[in-house]
Length: 147
Image 1 (cartoon, rainbow, N blue to C red):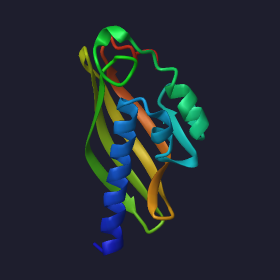
Image 2: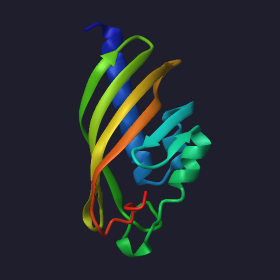
Image 3: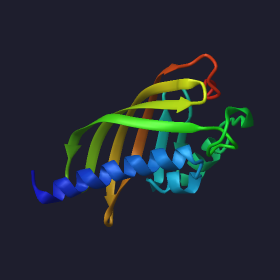
Image 4: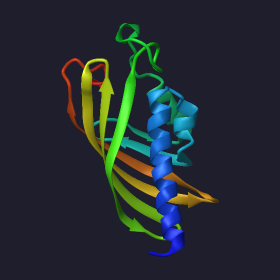
């Protein structure tokens, strides 16, 4: 593996982490900044959002409950765990990446699924051009169930 590819893989993993951490803290501008300007967030059986502003508007509408304890979402605790990231293809300008995710809230395991991402190199960063989110299971009491 060439050094440019090692650097690309590390930068992509960093972007994936930035997305998860920003989402947990409801820092939506920071989360949206992990996408290219006209990036797409597509949710299976749900919304397809184009552009950072649309992503911010959609995610800002996620229901929050102050009853769930301390944390980043109006008192609600949310923690994304991303694992088993697999690089399907990597070129100097684009990459296809797949990951599993699990989201924990005060109820415990809230929902889990898969990300299918297309990344684009933008200057010295790797940003999400298209993220397809497939939620495979959601707890019945999840506040995200209707998303």
